Every structure is written in structure tokens, then in C-alpha cells.
Image 1: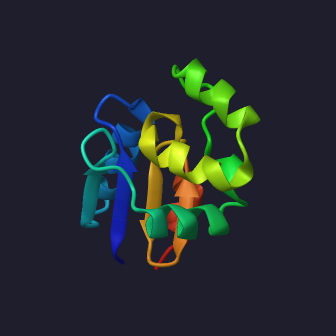
Image 2: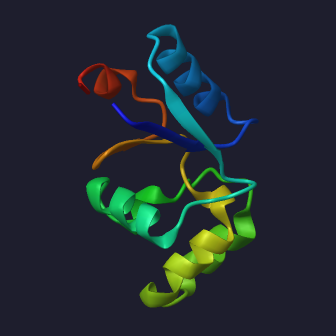
Image 3: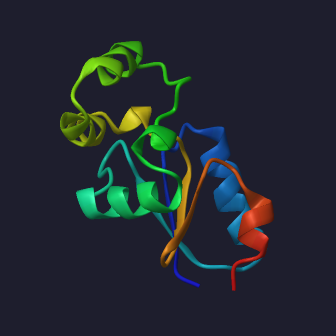
Length: 113
């Protein structure tokens, strides 16, 4: 397994995901989205597996201004705006090769080999 966890240190679900993999002795790479964020390619591959860009957006994000803007800007501009404001992405984003999940999903991770 080649696990990557994209999230923030303050996100409780991200911390729970890290604990899930640590407890099972599974190595992972943590990517702090406040510092680095996701590349366009990473974001697109995760969005494709998880039902598109709109499913990647955390509607409960504290950044209400960006959420509102995303409702009204053109589809082709959405990706850039989201990558500029990674705090609106649902976390944690957990990747294992081509597989990925949004949020805390231990039932899915248990099935990964």
C-alpha cells in the first residue's frame, strides 16, 4: 500500500485517519494542505474516483465566501479557485494508488490491500 493522507493538522477526521493507519502499522505520507495543497493532477484523479469536483467540496467549510463564489463561477474556473483555496476541500483525502476516499472512511480502508 502507498497511502497518502491530505488534510490539516486541525482536522479531527484527518487525525483519526492517521491514527487508523498507525494502529495497523501501515506507513503513510501526510500532506498538510495548508502548506502544500494538492496538485491539479492529484485533485483531478481523486475527483474522478469520487464523483467529480462538486463532491470534493466541503459544504460545511468555514470559508463561506469561497463556497458562495464556487456556486456562481464558470465550471472551467472552479478547479483553479478550489486549488487556490484548499480549505474548501473535504478532508481527509486518503489515496492508495488509484483508489481514494473523502472524509473518514475506515470501512473502505480496511478493504484496501
